[in-house]
Length: 295
Length: 307
Image (cartoon, rainbow over all chains, first blue to last red; front, side, top):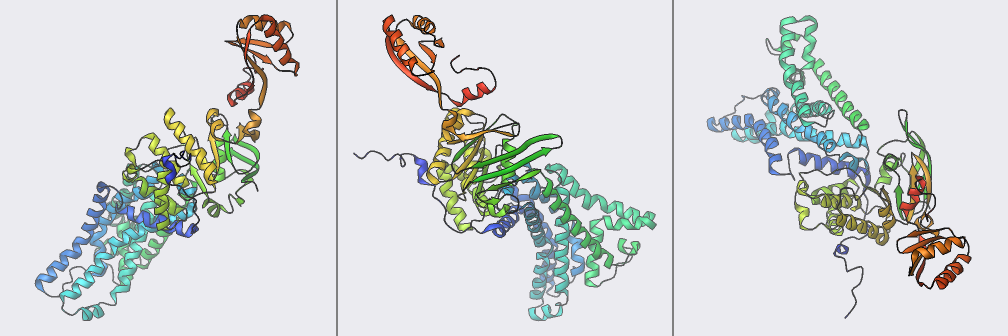
């Protein structure tokens, strides 16, 4: 009988070989983190319980669009209950909920579970990590801000029995819809991650994001309507208000009668500037946080 | 070419100095990094990985500067931290494959290497389960696998046997030794347990309070002690007495006498003494020190190996 070879005697030796293939470096690492985070935002690749909240919220964001399409199908005519510039008003609450529920997971998990040291000892830099997370979360939010409207455009077109005609009639709204959808998604991602990344604790992060969206809203309205003067600037502290103002500016529509935007009296372009400023500040805060957090 | 080189590496946290100007140059191999808790082992490793910045000084790993060429270098570096670092709600397969991609492997290469590496560390069917249900031993294996999956050229292990039972400890050390010896991966293993270092490593670096105490091959540390163990079949205390009378420094210990060896004459004296007393000489052995002894000496608990 042959004596056993010492190296094959151990069962673990079945596996390891040296790797001679390509190493794709930092760019690939950033993309891999981006897609992993994007999947994770909807709980894909995780247990079922992690999928429930993001998917339920996403479905809620689609409900207004679906409802309008259902009505359009019943009356078999073009129905414009939801205008492109008004869509945000229907989905602002699901978007805020999605941010509050998911943003703490995007940044908090790796801090809580101390996986950061594994990332930062790999082929990417701290800044890459922060920006990949931000980009992934913004992309996830784009699905909420943009996809229902895409559905709406095609659905409405189908309901009118003249798809190409409908699309050419409404073509002018497409760039605005995309611009607004992207801006809202990036803004909400930057703002909520800037807040959520400051703490590994999920509960604190959620409360912080909720406060940013929902608590600022009534306070700003009270300040604008009841106090006026300097209080009018509070409109820039309430995401729902300045996002809506920005959307109106993008579509070239004036502020509605007795709306907070009208009462505050600022030019609508200022809301667009505010959105850009918030995006810049939020992204800077996220990058700064991960440049400093200990790993 | 040295696999690791530091020049004047300093790390201060406020007024606390974690590393005080460390100069180190190491050749490829399995290297043990020893020091008491707080000696600066983890600080050194974290600087080399780019996880923290040094206050002063430079460091190169496999020829790359750890700061200027960080992302490039870290494609070839593996790190197994001391602390927990695994998410509970994903499977080992999913997690290790993701980590391989972060190290620059393509998706398909990452999947293939993940399967091989998890087998290598001894994780089989359970690799498809969520990691929250894993035992400490299984978690340590996954931690090693994620450090190995991209086939690094240098592997940093920070207390790899932490929290393992004796059997798990043996398996982990065996795995580390074979990984270093059979696949040509240089390993820097930090531990405060000398026995482990002695079993696995070829080279030893001792740091204490942020300074390099000593760096050299293990055999230099465990060189012969100059102590003979004499085992006899007969009256041990009489032999002890006789050897002291003959002017040798000797100590009685159990069934043997320990004799300080100064010159060849000691062998003759022992032989003659045994002959005179009529005791049977079973064994004369030149003792080798183990690392524990050296550190005990350093701590000033014993001055002479034979005492």
